[in-house]
Length: 443
Image (cartoon, rainbow, N blue to C red; front, side, top):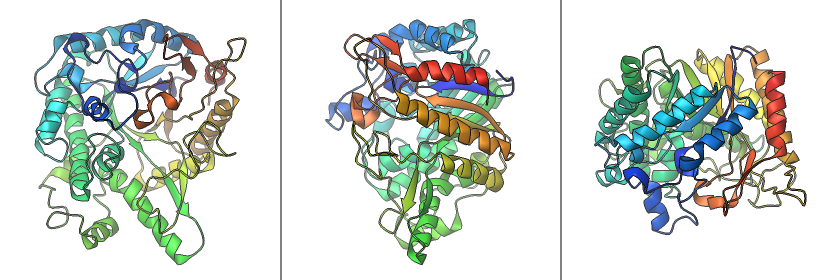
């Protein structure tokens, strides 16, 4: 395994930990979202990782990964959003020590969408004060773990938190308001910049980055309308977040388009204060990219996050069970484009994977060949981009375990390890063994 490239797996706290009432953990926006009936399954028991983390780390050790990207649950560390809960930090203390003992580098993500409900009740991400609360939370976590953590990820997919959570109401906290979504997105980015400053102050030589998700959009036809729609989609889905993080500010064409559509409360970008954009553009050590699929864009979907095929257990050829098109070639194109447009010092694929529901056969084996094919093609796409000079330094497969797939509940399985949600038994799939061998081969 090359010393300049990290192979890993990714998870997130709400999707795997369970133990939602253990050791004084507080309520999150996702706990409330489930309680209000917006999703079929909740965070209890998830995969019970909170009590089974040693078993899961042993699986990672056998897999041969060099890094484990997980998230820290803010409501476990600060149940009321402001007071430190020592028992919550103790869990991540044990987790980090167990990882290091297994020779696996911890890559914690500070925010993977599970805002404490107490912070939400005080205004949540549309309220600027939440940035300060996030800085306090970051300081508490880094103060406890920073002596053993070499890589930090501040925010995971701020587009999702802002747009699916505040524009569409599809994700927690369930708000549907364009104006609040844009404010939330700005404060998520600002919190990334501020947290980067905190980590640099407290975390020694640790590297810091952000995980941005993307959709590579392309015109559905050669018509001028579809070409314009694809450019707009790129601004809405990608550039609105990639540009500010890399020092380019909010894209002017999108500011103009949003202003014309009446999507600001007052003047355009009236929520931006004097030094905000400089803080958001605080240099990072790497840019994390989460990639799953691309989208053919027309005037109907230029501001929509849509599946191209019907989700379900029998997807059409060329699609996953999420209804997402399998397009590894667009991963290569997007990585080359990011390198050319932004020149990041390093890019890490922080998530990439596919949902397929293959279960045990009569012998207990799980042959998820479709997932193997997906991973093989996308890892090759990463290699192609690296061969074109893109400074890619890591690949984290999503996900180690079948888990709670947010509003899809337990019905979508992304894991390379099968989880029986009745017994919590873990069974490595064929893709687990394939990935182990692929790591040995190198990129």
